[in-house]
Image (cartoon, rainbow, N blue to C red; front, top):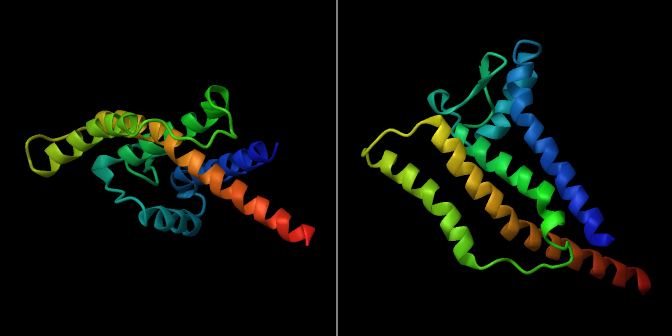
Length: 160
């Protein structure tokens, strides 16, 4: 039961983070101050280049297409995680699955960076989605394990 509550807390917090991606462009014409503050928060984790971003509500999203793919994949992975894996199983999959999921994004980003070709937002979205979706199965068990350990220690202090 404890792992389920921890999981729901992480899911809730991530959903708040994810909603912010849409709130920034939505609020821009309503309250530009709040919108710009949200953009500023996301600028700490994303370059937010207009040509590499999707637009919604006539404004760019708070993150670029690749980051949006990563976070969308991560959210979908979080939603199906308890269906395919027990929450009290903190073991991560073989590292090669993660490496294989990151290779397309690495190839896309590197070939563009060195000037071999120009990527496009749909490809950035897809490669980011793959990395985010698979990444959940490596990141979430670690977070769940750490949170579970902390809660066990706190319960131990209450017993004293």
